[in-house]
Length: 419
Image (tube, rainbow, N blue to C red; front, side, top):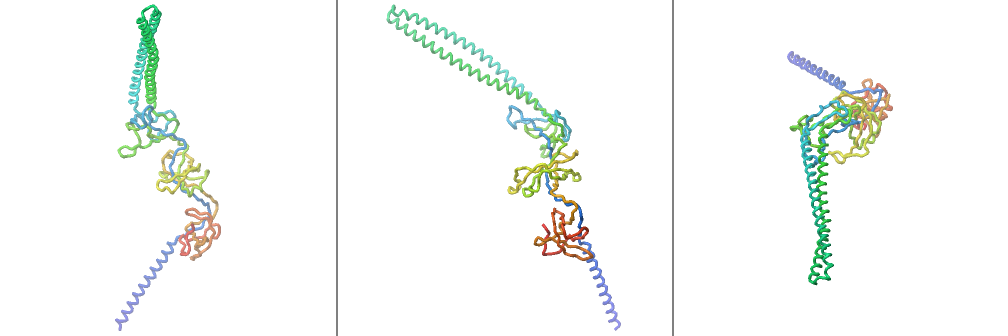
């Protein structure tokens, strides 16, 4: 009997211990649940509705520096070797040499064109001398033919006094002399026209050679490209050994290749695409904040300057259309350079001194918004009138007061988050 009682006591003690452990775990679970409950307070402050755009930084005033296209040569023909180039980010002045190319090929071209021009001048002089000699010879032959005609006419006056056969010979000689004179006169004019045409061909070749010589001389001057404004030089990377690198001395470039940009750092802008769905919310004059992706801590004030009148399609989807927005940047910084990517927050709406609560705390059904109020350990569903909303916050026009706690995870399967 004693052993049975002892066993019962031990069993009861064990069950009690298990019960206490279970109670402890339940209490810990309740505390954890209470600690995991996410809440937020209704605050009074400023409400902003923004639109995030992503674009590329550029200069308002800039010009592109390209490898010169040489006069008198086919576009894209040949390459040029860089002999001098400014460093990336260098400050340049109006008139400074930005990049220079090896002029040896153009100097040789000048010599070739000069030799061609001089040779044509010699050919023209020789042709003119030959033509003068030929004209004198033709004029002498023409005078001789005229004399022959006059002599034949004199002989014709004797026909009444000489035998008939001799008179026929005189007639034949006169006809022959007149025919010869006529032919010489006709060929004389034709020869002069032919000579003029031959001379004109050489003169045209000479003029072309003269223009080619002038082109070659001007090409030498183009081998050094100078800045047309004060600013900062931003080199355009080129492909070298399968890598994108800044151009340097010794690199080869084709005519028309972009070498760099010279920008005025005092006025910068951001060009950003805007979806056609959102463009109606933008207009010139709206304020903005600009953040550089490379330097997230830097924030610049900005303003929407203009929105393009025409839209374009995206390369990924032809159905989606985009407009282009230009946002000016106020302020200067050495790090603010062209081609940097930037995020722009355009201020669409600003309301001051309003009640603001997290958007995820608001749920609704059939157009009626509500929140879950927490007070004295209890929750209460309360209808509210919601005004403007942004991605994270909503303006409460009525139904709540400043300082009230609202649940960020309202539990109601029949209601949905407000859109």
